[in-house]
Image (cartoon, rainbow, N blue to C red; front, side, top):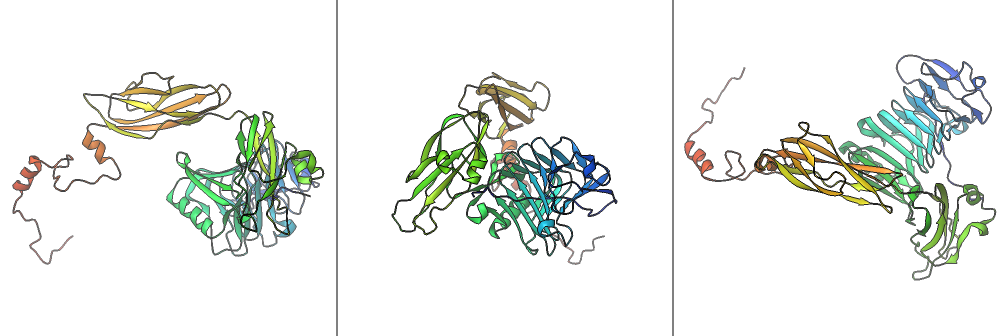
Length: 486
């Protein structure tokens, strides 16, 4: 049997604050969250705590589910297609010492499922906690932080098979609670993305986690990619497998004929050809169960690095590359990668931020944008903010490259949106306008005044010499060698 890596997670107990009434899940394995009979004191709500004990899976398949707190011992709690859960207070996974093994806290978020944690989320506080996000699943943390492993005895495991884990604007500058002194903890990227605020503290946390093997990709064999440029103000973190699959794992690719490509691994004997088997299907179980591999095989023991396949729109596809490297363990099974065949939204870059200054009361400059899309698209420039209404005039708002005239000092934010008729994307740029070129120069972070520029006008000239002469031989050093300061 070939399986896609499974893991799970759970949430909240009472950590601090006001005691909340408790309702305990007593339903059968695979019972529904929405069935009142599955709870001791009625459905969880914004005023009580949902408690799970024992290894009985609960399926959350409704929108708008809420609970004040959630203690996820046992489980797993599975948030599936269309299900949304908001936990208003602390979320703690693996809080009690006995929350281990089958009683460990577990949550699994699947395609279309959404978990919103309004406060901090602990995964493995003092025991075992597991969170797994699959393709299309979403976990949002609104405030404070994500702590993976915390106190001695804590064992937290977060696995991204796909989907997204978002530490949003309300989280602390150090959004990741990585505690090296605690027991075991890890964040494993096997697809999907984690986003968090672009702060020095978060960068340090990520680097420390990667260095110490806490943050890893594909169980440690892959590479962690930390990208601060994908979205302004945020860091995107992904895992890259050594096979370097294209399309990337859990990405979107154009429908129709497309190319799957990969990098061949090194052989056991240098110079020896490495052959691969490649499997491609829209039926995940066919690849997981591997009962009829020939029916989904698109490359049969060939030393190649790509193959053409056909993908229907609005479908998710799964593929795997197995390698023959000359080992007794051949073939070496590769992980299951996935992508969605769809119209890819336009990629929009409005251009770099700009510093400029007025000349004769205004400034006209070029907007040099870049848009990438396989289909025809339309564009629209808009003024998001300006010092005064009407001080920014865009010459041709429907042109990708156009001019803008600015007639006041201050900050301008312009947005460029591109649409291909189905999807749209946007990007912004900021223009800071100053009264003159010297003010503009002094606004730059790397500005260094000229030696001798006594009046701060960005020039060394007779005016500075006059100031020097005016103060020549003057002395304002102290004369009292025992000066009392009240």
